[in-house]
Image (tube, rainbow over all chains, first blue to last red; front, side):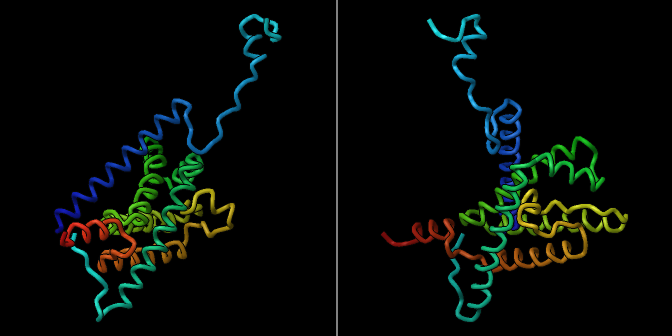
Length: 57
Length: 167
């Protein structure tokens, strides 16, 4: 009984560690769970970045 | 794990344990989520305690909120809930030691118990005697959950009932 409880406790601690590391690595890559991601840039500004006029064509 | 229905001799203790489970899971789920949402604030609180070296502070600022949330989730779902209750009791013991050390050194800091919720809901968040008493009460609740093996609204109890039921 004691051994089972200790094993379960270790499993829970390790699971929390895995989730925390996953969350940390995701947020380090710019993928956030709670904060809003910056709004997508308008298509016209993307076109200007590529040397276009932003008006298409 | 065997299902232990409420015994006729101690129904009050069993119902109390159910109530305690609801209280503890609510506190830990909410405070865990609040800290996950604002890890920087929790890191700053940990730094104010001046207990850990810098790297460990960052590690625990990421790890502890998720541990609290996971343990709360275990109590919600009723999966490994007795072990989760025991771990929560241990965690509260660690918090008591940390708060006690801050009080002994005469440092006045926020305990960081509820993360950003402390500001939003104006919850008590000072590392003082009240926080220690709050943690002691939580430890008592967790030990009662561990002793009573509450299988009401628990997936663990549901599955073990189904597995042991005759076809």
